[in-house]
Amino acid sequence: MGVSRGKFFLVIFSISILTAGCQASPGAEAKQPGKRNVIFMVMDGTNSDVVTLARWYKGGSLNLDKILTGGVRTYSLESSITDSAAAGTALATGHKTVTDAIGMVPVDSEGRSEKQRRSFRPVVNVLEAAQAEGLATGIVSTSPVQHATPAAFSSHSIARDDFDDIGEQQVYQGMDVVLGGGKLSLIPKSELDDGNLEKVPFGAKDARKDGENLVSVIRDKGYSFVETKRQMERASGSKLWGSFAYGDVAYEFDRAKLHPNQPSLAEMTGKAIDVLSKDRDGFFLFVEGSKVDWAAHKNDPIGMISEVLSFDEAVGEALDFAKKDGNTMVVAVTDHGNSGLTIGGRTTNKTYAHTPIEKIVGPLKKAELTVEGAVSELKEDRSNLKSVLADYGLDGLSVDDFSMVASSKDVGGEMVKLLAEHANLGFTTHGHTGEDVFLYSYGPGKPTGLVNNIEISKYIADFIGMDMKGVGSKLFVNAAEYYKAEGFDVSVDDSDAENPVFVAKKDSLVIQYPENKNVRIENGKATELSGVNVFNGEEFFIPVE
View: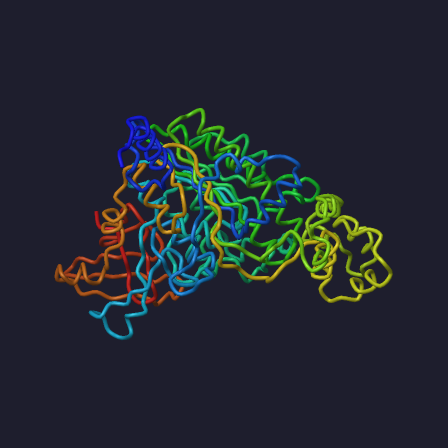
């Protein structure tokens, strides 16, 4: 049967439209002229219902809504449900890895001994690759900056909880801007006097074990070191380090009442962009809204809403800059789901079709603080329990409910259960979940469609013009193999267990590489390297220029 000319062109037109709508791939868009910037943002531990709930709570659209472009698959190397370390590593490096590993992947090579097959090697992240291209770099988070996700973009460790190693690497990594929490991992216990011990969230035992004062190192490296919102706003210069809490920065809903000296995530993001955008070669900025995840682990809907809206304001800062600049890619994702929050739960089994949004949002709007903020105000004798409950939107409880909370060892745990019931919300777990999550992106070269978490770094590398594999081959050379090939005797000096050093000796020449520093020492003379020395507990990996 023949096809008319009109129908032929209609078919061609339709095909072109469908093709234009297909998922882009790395390299699909031409490189942009001039300097290029990337702002990579992660809203930790956020499932789709949380975003919906935050939108209803706000009563209007989110900045994120404008740039929804696809979805992200989140599984890790060995689990259908990832942890933040493996997820952060996948996003930052383009490599799947195992639980707890930060910027490290397992070595399962037949050419190695049985003992070595489960050892780990470092892999380059997008921030390090951007530095190699001459871009300014920075990280921002509301958690301690040493926490899993920001750590994956700025360090390498086989254990996500090793804040000492992670923190030291970050200081010697050469980033231009670092803003967030985590001061405790920068100072030794001797710097904590009796007057501020009560402010330390994890206890003085979590101060640095190696006795090093990294705040002094930070200042010596030329950073403006700031600890309050006002100091951050006034800071000038091209290098800025802000530590606004010993541990994590406060939830946004708690900040104004309880921690007014701390900046918001949006304010930190805006300041970081302001500093980094002055670089003539462009910049890479990583931003994490860390505590949606923390609130989700507690099943606290107020904390979750607080941090989604806080993150959304930070996205607004990024988009404002990107739209004016015209050559900035913005990518925003969550690394995994958490809690299985549902709008509707057992209380709506038979009434879901007759549940106006006020039945959901109304009880939530009564809360002024997150459960963490409210419980932090509770006196030891619990004499102010009624006002604490009211701060969390739980005024007017029945006698039975009040008695249940008053007698509980876990006051906060009972409070979140009651509020979820009042607001007709459901939770399936206090842990992570394995669903696909939303992808948000804007600007030239942006990823779209359903992508795997390991693919996003490839879009970024292509847009900036980075050879991540090539950079990694120079940043992380096996030190023993390299120096043995040059005729050196090699060893690891672990006489100071907290500060192991790789040593290579040949005749009168002694070369040392201290762990976690960007330093090479040749016969006592130190020189700076392009990256940090990484020790996996067995082997050193070093930069070779």
